[in-house]
Image 1 (cartoon, rainbow, N blue to C red):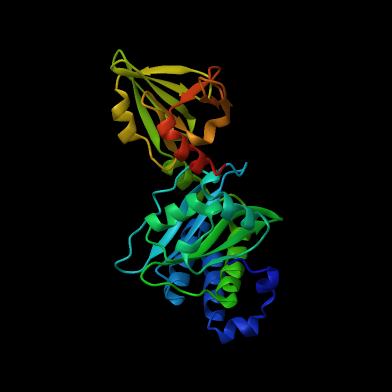
Image 2 (image 1 turned 60 degrees about the vertical axis):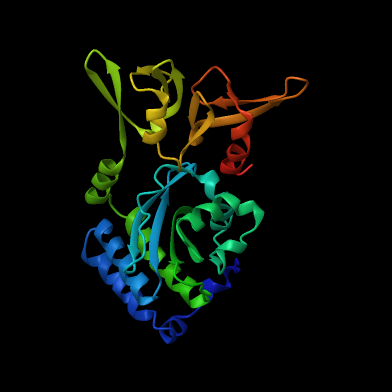
Length: 308
């Protein structure tokens, strides 16, 4: 599934034999001729159509490699879109894939259903998106992993080739140089800021407070209201009950650990297991002093989602 770095050593002649030189030229002209954000969208669309893939996409990491977010996606006609699904998502969900990308490897998954047990969280997400085969290629700049670009096959399984991976790598290098190596792209910066989702807290007295999803550490039931812990250490009383929060918070990044509590996976600092007759689990959260109990019925999913 994971080739060595020999796929990067393909010559331009070999790429041209596979019809890829036109796509590489298109990518270069797009980068030179328009703002980076628009160019990436055009490149992703061109690559997906030229490769006859069902989807072509890109996701980016945050500076600490703790979260990632989908940024661009092209879908063939009749294929569902998922670009809005994974936003501010813990890297733990793709831990198996992330390790290979950090090593600079292209990951060729010809049959998603046969991914190893270590990739069960990734497999579940890919199957949810109806993926049958997936190709993922890292985008690096100055030796640091910044993003990933890839193809999905949805309608039928597909065997990816070294030429497929090399073309994505070369286009990814162009994207990386433009996005991370040049002057800041005001359009891209503004787009990322405007896309950051906010949750509006009903704090009483007619006051509303908007906070980004990434700032929410956890939510706990407080009778008919809820207490919301934020990453600055503050706690806000919100007037909505916990069941309203369950429908509000994205399942990709938040998890119920108790009938009275929901936590943001990014802010989990550790998990403690206490033995003896009263065997129980407790979760440690960043910016929260108290430890939070984990109910037995939620333990398995918690461990899977954390990739532990």
